[in-house]
Length: 156
Image: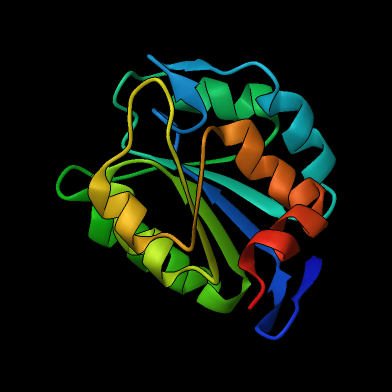
């Protein structure tokens, strides 16, 4: 668990990190540099799950390489599936990171929703649903590794 006190706002008690794959952790199906090392540092404190529609395939292999859990969405709209998954974990203990329109519901539900903008872009719906916006996945993961960055950004 990672506990982060946000002054004048709330205390986050995060147990689960739910990640989108394409456009978030990967571009064209290839995991971005720096992600694996950061996830290794976070893994002792968070249950990390890759939740994806698996557009480019290779999601299971990416998760295995990263040492994290893999969950593939069923055919059909992904947004409600991602939302239900986060709800099943207990929204108050989830940080969710994504960039797509199908990530918006999970970003809104999670205790901390982070929208990332990368080479594949970011859906406006994800931006509107998130608590925070960052330039890329490594910046998002660094917020968890260096909580004072999150405190400085999210405090009242």
